[in-house]
Amino acid sequence: MTIIEMFKSIQGESSYAGLPCFFIRTSGCNLRCRWCDTAYAYSGGSELDCSTILKIVRDSNLDLVEITGGEPLLQTDLSEVVSMLISEGFKVLVETNGSLDIEKIDRRAVRIMDLKPPGSGMTDRMRWSNIESLDEKDEIKFVISSREDYIWSRDIIKRYSLERRCHILLSPVHGEIEARDLAQWILDDGIKARLQLQLHKIIWGNNSRGK
Image (cartoon, one colour):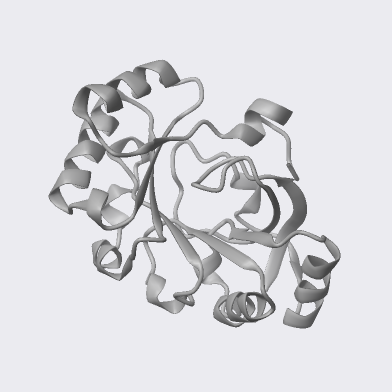
């Protein structure tokens, strides 16, 4: 796998927010979301084989691992690495941008799939058939940059009955909408979703890498 960085941090997102987690950030992404905060992962990185990755993860002394990017599904070794880590007893989260086939990810992993609202500029790149592959342990994330993004996300949640399928995460784009506004919209509409505030940025700041 081509790796940009690996590090320990507090999990800042998902239903596992607040827990110590070991992160593996892969290189390369096939999308260019307008508000992307990890553009440094578009290229570069170092090639590491599966055994080296496993040793580094073991040495972290953490049992929660997230593979993120970039876009992990661009890595040909992703399936092997995920299955290897799970077989070694690690809880594995894989965050993917929603444009590629998530069936390639071991179903024992927690698959965190983005669905890109219009404000991202990438809505037309979504692979909608992925929704049928999700189960109750998996998660869908919407990153919200405006009221219009929220309304779009709310309608998608209802159209695909996502509340009955998997966990739902709604995250405000920093500096574009207020978290309290998004919270109120969720309450007003009675959506069964988790408001996500990116704890790692609250703790270490917006531009910290390796955190």
